[in-house]
View 1: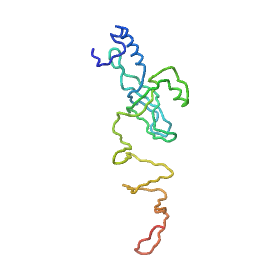
View 2 (view 1 turned 180 degrees about the vertical axis):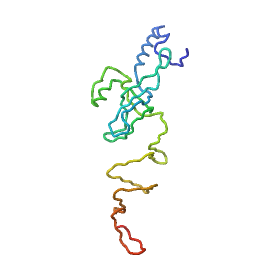
View 3 (view 1 turned 45 degrees about the vertical axis):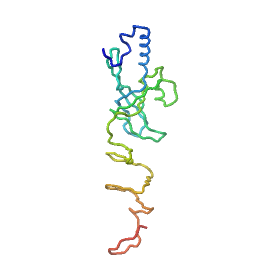
View 4 (view 1 turned 90 degrees about the horizontal axis):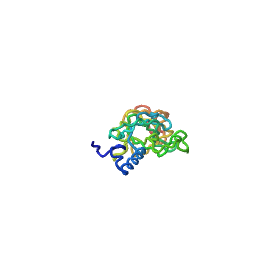
Length: 217
């Protein structure tokens, strides 16, 4: 039977020589070591809310081989921590979504106790290189986004099909030119060169009739 270069651990040749038997043992041991693979997100605990980093359920997409070269799918791996770009209390909150394809890596020891306590600890068991100790790093092989920050030679584009909220005690924009297209609404005081131009400002040089007022004071 043609196997295209791939075989399961136990084959008809495994017991024909000492070398073949040793190769079977080595391949069996290597088969228990999980390193990294492509996975699909099947579930996620967070959905873009302002919360601590959550967990995902992931399904390895690359099947296993059995001894007859028949593909054997993996089961879902539950409650795996995922990566967020965060330093201290500064973060970009962009949680995984169901259906995402990404990379999972697997720890060389049981990380369950550290995941629970978030402190230095001994391994939770004696397992090694287990898929149960998976960490979801992020998306690859995914489609065209509809909400994004784009960097290219033309500059930086921030695009959203919905509202963009900026919440800060002060917003400073420094640019030689600022263009706003569309209806513009302001709430609160609007100043230019330190002068109120929206609500309680006054003008100098006021005259009756058809004349124009002077500059803002």
